[in-house]
Image 1: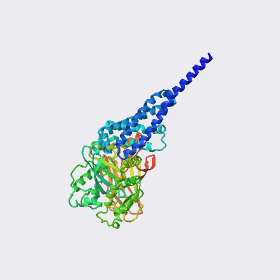
Image 2: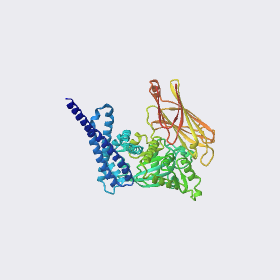
Image 3: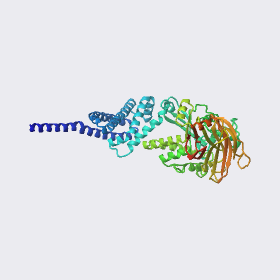
Image 4: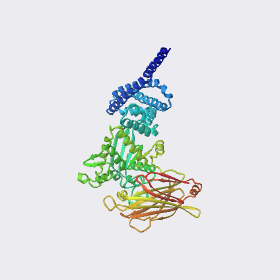
Length: 583
């Protein structure tokens, strides 16, 4: 009997050993070894793709699909462990990772198999844009892989961040483009050539939508590729139109810049970016004689270019060194001060910007996904901070831009609202030396709510080649129906004691007060607007639903705010739009 018992135990033990080897050890070993093969293949695929060797990529994708199939088969043998609570969640995550990886690798293989042997990246992009369902599946799978990065690292034994950087970038890029899925085919010029107006807004010389337009360009895109890019000094364009425009000029420009016509360099005078861009397109066509379609406008400040140089590196253009630090100042000196030393005429002094733009475009090619991820972050951050603004003549695309807060439109808020908008009128590049602070105060007078906005400008600059007294036509946008009581601190012109007039009008569903003020270097001045808020604001405060929306002017880095709204006090620096609720 004892012998039979021992025999049974030995048989059971042997069975368990065999079972564990066949159903546990071998599957785990196989999953791990195939995972290592996939890891190695991914590294090779990146290198081949970087060199546009998609035939080799296709071969490795086919091998990877086979490895994934083997992993799937062995995971089925290990499913028994899903019943262990501590294992279940991670096992399920691994199954999902394999599923998402299969979608990506098999889909990529099928794409390359459907294309010619000499397929390019552009061909692959075109395929994805034509097959939006597959693009959507890719996006979802990469997003899931990004969520499960830690598990991927542990399974594949990854000891660096390269894999995570790549997955994160692709996930980020696909998500970034997602709102435009239905329209990216058109945006990228696949149906027809697309032409975009480029505006380089210098925010050291502030204008309502971000800065003075000293340089402009035309970007032509066809089949996802840049067909042509033209960049030029805006004065070259404006000079062709002198005496020919005979157009209606905004009154503050006529008065404080003393120009007889409205030129394109001053086209961005409306606080709302879409409205200003319609004016810019009209003036471009009027001056250039190019009556073809302009499909959109892209405007950016020098801050964006400086940040890009932080990724692609220092640029040596005609002996001038451009880098991230002090980029704006270096560029201004190159086109305003030192062009003669390079034997360049005043007329051609901005040609260096063309060369710099081309060098940057070349520098953006064939970079690592890690660099592209950083560039995407720069673009996203500057879109949110309004250092990049985009306008589309297609109303549906424009609505998407508005929904993503990329359009620079005046916000339609059913609440209290304030936006301070400065227009530097003949103050050189003085804005880089100006500190702004705003005090917003609301108090009750009888049954009315009286608001007061005190804007204090501190001029830290001097009289120099790029700075002089600060001359600004200041507008504040407030709730529609607000009634101006008084303006204090306004000036008829600079260097006068005579008070200036305050313009009052309605636009964008807002009431706007506008006037002029000048601040000498090393001095401070305060401009005050006092007005009665509409009766509806009282209801918000009385029923505890009062909100204040503060919209930041594009191109302004920060404004210091101090709020005193009845019994509510707050101090903060405004870097982007802000909504405050008071209950």
